[in-house]
Amino acid sequence: MAVGIGIRPGTDRERIVRAIEAVVGDLTIACLATLERRATEPAVRAAAASFGVPVIAFSAEQLAEVEVGHSSERVASAVGTASVAEAAALLAGSGELVRGRTIVEGIVVAAASA
Image (cartoon, rainbow, N blue to C red):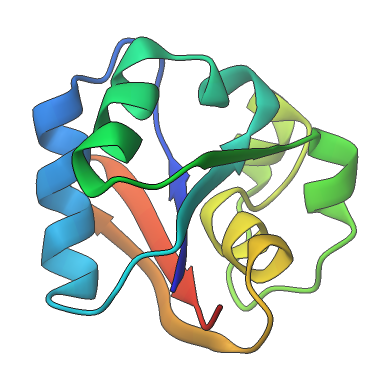
């Protein structure tokens, strides 16, 4: 699965890993996908390393072009796209959402088939 995540700056690796595990369970993860400026966060890189997968980054413009089930005007005004997790999962994956937008400990997680 391609796992899309939306986080706030400074979120720690442990919270990211817990949120992903809570949403995807035992399913195989192929990559973590997120907004470009979040992909460089040390905790995102560390979480990806925990799963042994790469981080795939997308621009706000790329994410904004994806049709998603959930969008947020607050997120749009903050980062330039109304969806990060769902849009990133769909762009990084090759199919439909397997897990829609889910918020765990303030981290937004979604997953698409890969």
